Length: 192
Image 1: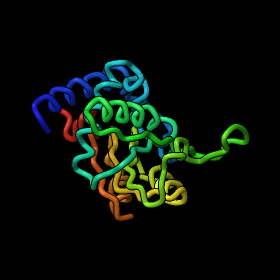
Image 2: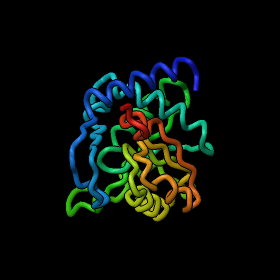
Image 3: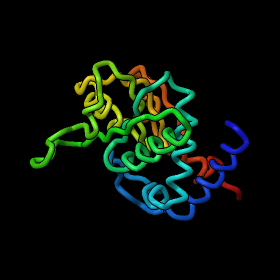
């Protein structure tokens, strides 16, 4: 990571700590209980957060096989895909954004993958996730993208909770890059 990238990451972690992180008991999308919650949207949807995730995740794409589009998993991954798509355009390597729905709506386009008109069979796509816990949501999105004709090349997560999700995704044959982990919010060995 470049020096600029390192300072962007530091600022993003600070923003996530300030706006998104809470130590409280919650039930996660995976059904698991946790003693902390990180609502990345609270940070990502700020102008600064959007710029930071766009830059950092675009840079992280370099660790994956080359992609021709980025896909955000509904809902938290959608602004990530938009931010990376915008950044890619500004940096001269335009990547369209796709949104992967959890389920087909009963009205409108009735698509599982929004933005799919530009998706050609075999197109390499990177998945962008806000938080990985078990990897279940990500792996479902992989299947939906494959059904739509994409070739998923890997996953970039804003936060890996370090609860086995990245390993599950890797076990499915996909590389995973995390911008942050739970250690950025909760140290392994708290002082005292």
